[in-house]
Image (tube, rainbow, N blue to C red; front, side, top):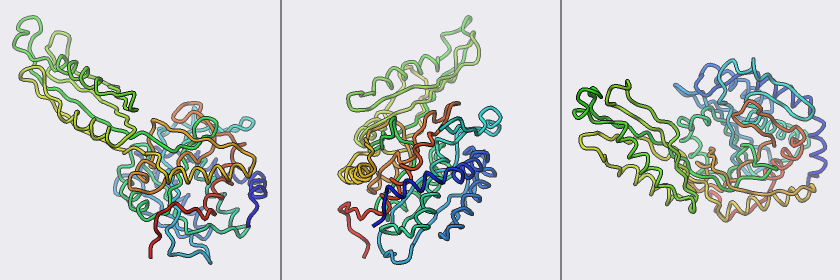
Length: 392
């Protein structure tokens, strides 16, 4: 039986190593769409994990960055057990050159820089956790698969199939996204839908013969009102028409217009309703074409009994360390939405505390490192019964 308090203290002495590893990753800019840079940092991450003696596989991609799958099969751990699945990503929302304005820096206990909080700090935390477990001969309760992906920030289009496949064969998924305020874990997330609405009318001179025109913008205005009315806040369903555009000149009846729609849903039933109603929209203006594209790109992560079991285990680990751990739900999506939707018990928000995801003040609180690393180690060592069968 390992001593969690002793482990936490040991991690606190590894600050210099942690800073060195994190600085290297943050200063390798990795915007989602830049395959060359994303693959470059992916190679560094792969080499780091290979140093620990783990099995590293690069999942090659044609357009997006390559995905990284790592398996930890310690001796004396039954390789036939369903593995823990630890999920994270190494792409960021920040374009190349951001480091000039947001350099990696340490101010007291805070670390700043693009991609620190979301979520390079957590990849390094996972690496340090495994390294310390190996040093102390602490073995997880079952094999562990670490899945580090390259396109989470743009919707996980190339990694979704891999994530879902791994989740279907996993014991449970532990997602290293940032926690909620105060360090609370995320036990539910809304599903996310994205739609584009296009209207195509007929142009005409607005002063000479407006009657010959068919305004795409007028039609779009009708549609925006209808779309916003689909919201059901009491059910957790929100709709936001976030961008619109159209027309060519003030004196021309607009031939084309468009709008981008964000939908957030707490249940699959609401996701199906919104999608059905969006696809059923009809033009109000005669002789104007209406085109609807898009759909749900992240299913909701629903708090289940299995999620509760996972969270209560995390809370017991925290209690032993003298810490209080809370849970909550969020409207943002993550790859935890995918793992949960295929039936894999999922606990999210296990990353370091901080603030400013996708914002210029992005930061992590270094003081949270020892506890969050120990929490991850504790979960990996847990003999948790989540009430689903093992593979024969």
